Image 1 (cartoon, rainbow, N blue to C red):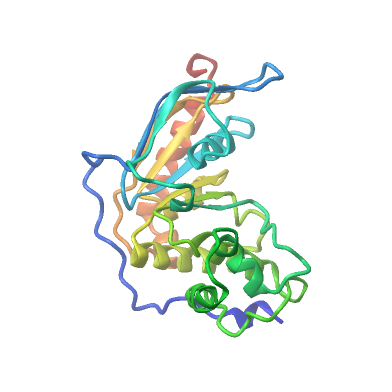
Image 2: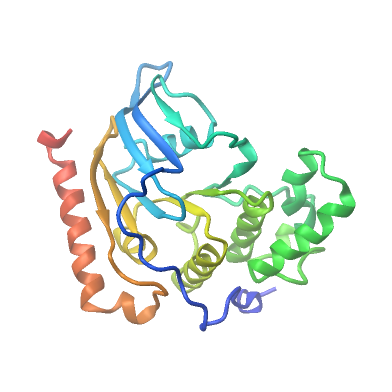
Length: 276
């Protein structure tokens, strides 16, 4: 099965959401003075304050080892902070958060349908109710007709689409993504970006996206949060005031270059000794 057989999850006519007007009055997730020190004595995070609004697309960017992935896992509830607090809306459960890891982490012995439906199976949903949800989820990511395929039959981009479908199967309010496209070739990555933005603007969930690429952060996000080297702190929080949908023309525009330079300047300043 070739990459070309994936198709696009959404057509070019799809329109994105209106730009956000600053930080919302009632954030969806609030991190207050969050620090994390591991049993080894390594301090990953130091007094992180971050407010995440409903339907924002936020990229976390910073050098390797600055605590981006640690921060994502704490938001997901896959660990507890050593100090500080993380507040979510009352009534939120683990199923309200979807997580896409750097690797697809699919079960090689199971079909695509079984991989995507696993969260619902673990939640005790009846098999008859899982099947239509899986079919809907696969169609959403451009993989209708691949339910009976196995991971070994899929390209890297298709495996990542399966991982995204699995993360969205519980219909979460927040989607956390830890460098999911870093090992995928550039043309496929750009297609996945466009499909992800289309899904985000339709479903209106919140995305927190970890990346090393300032160009990817500018293209995808309406906020780029820059972190310092370890122990990670928030150094800058830049709103990318560009309308959606974004496309190849935006990637080659002077505006894109201007935003990229601003993010690069923040990253350079964050890496200076005085910022740490």
